[in-house]
Length: 302
Image (cartoon, rainbow, N blue to C red; front, top):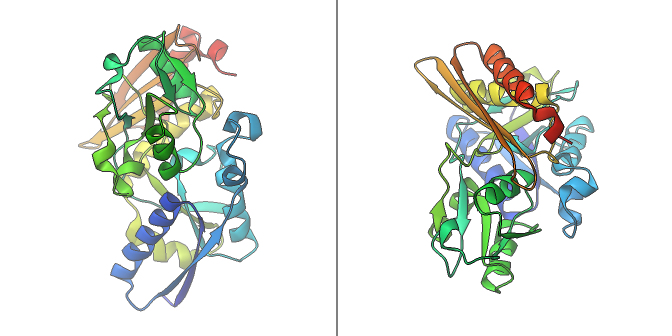
């Protein structure tokens, strides 16, 4: 390994910076002589906080500026949440490492109520996720779902200012930023299916930068990568996007993958589920996607 300097492209949000620093620390633990700098960027997704992502281009808005920094050679690697990444890879870029997955679940956060069932009729719940909206309304159709955008800190502030009765956030983000104590309750993963890739971080680099890929190998967690492959394949077959109420979650034990996925109506009136177990990630993802399609998933995906 001849690289002695590395530049990490990252968004400026507190969570993104935590993730970039985490990757930096993991690399330095293995390569202590490496000089690593952060290249902080503001993405389109960060600039427009007033509209739903589905109205301004989707989750790729959090990724494309970082990818352009790689292509322009302004950075050597970029750290992403896997759930923000397109299932169709950029031809000039590759995921050099997928880190061991953190908490994949969703957190119920409230200052006055202990759980979803504890909320009063017509309570206001904040989220920007069609997936969360679908699952919430399937269980509590009386709820008023309101748009909640912004970084973790600003979302918690809006809750504390009583703009919402409760908000739903990724458990991993709260834990990483030291807000685990704000988690009022965690949704059960078997019913509140996580977003595809939720809780996992990916490190992207140029496909022709072999030295950087070799450098990143120490970060790679193969079981997590296998789970990401099967979850993302489901979405690829279904043709889903951030506009779609889709979730998938895979676990691997003894080289066997178990995949559970759902597609729902945005208003929660219909929830389709499928599960499959096996060792071939591609085949499992294909089977689950086909099962959902046979149940009518395409009509629910926009």
